[in-house]
Image (tube, rainbow, N blue to C red):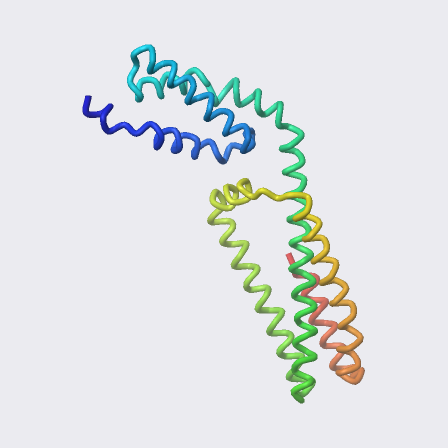
Length: 214
């Protein structure tokens, strides 16, 4: 009797569905439908004389979520799941290019800012080199953290609800950054007064960056 008195049905159901939330076979509407169905089964079992805890255990067994129903929902939601995965892959590619062009364009903005403040060309190139190396270091740390936090990363990605509008926004930002980077390069060359040795070192830095960028 003491166990049944301390049993909280709503908390147990929420905890159970929280565990199923990461299952890609179920959409949000599927989970709500399933939750309502679970409550209906529990109510029917309580009317037959079972207490809440017993009814909850029996209802879970009847739903058999981990086998037949999961396969059923998986088949029904396959087009949705494929679309979601495709959007995530595309978003990952776009984020990659966004970061790439962000680093390049901001490095050129750094050159312009330093030249406007009358910093020597040699020192300017040294600052750009340090800037690019810093980004390499940060990206390396990021990938190492992904390796050690693999399960959390996968759970986070699976919980992302990316819509086509979001993907289009990422594409627009990536394209804008690429345009900005392209437009800034002639300005940088003019500000460096087309100094061949300095530009040669700058080109070399960018070539190293492009070669080593993951």
